Length: 187
Image 1 (cartoon, helix red, strand yellow):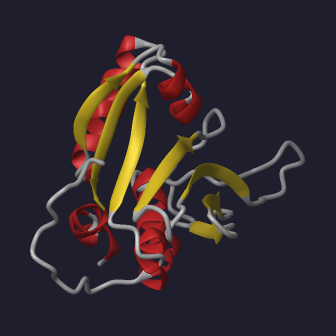
Image 2: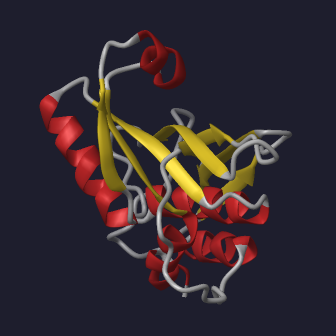
């Protein structure tokens, strides 16, 4: 089993509630859909209420402002068996003409990290899928900024395909390190 040396045990100064509050400052509501071993958070963009010209309202075809789901992250953790979280998907997508807060994906990652920490998970693993070269490079760069390190390529092997569902670069890191790097986004 792969293991990561976490930085010395520091008590993080924020919780999942702090991540929720930080997201709300950017007009995002994080919806916790965790149940059993399944971990999931959705990011909902709240209707625009400011009159600042640089912001874009969330408007439907009827002209009525409404909430819109703009991101999701999900994965699973079998805590009694393994002290790790396996991230299945991170997706952030805006409708055409809709500007998202720049930290949308980061809030989702930090929320999942806080929930994983609460469940006793020490490591996080994610596959930087290799469907298109440009997108793969962006994913590797983003996950590296979060504190995940490249571990090994995932290829066409049967076990890899069953566990990860695709080809790419397996990346992993200590949950505490990921949360420590995200502290500036929460404060």
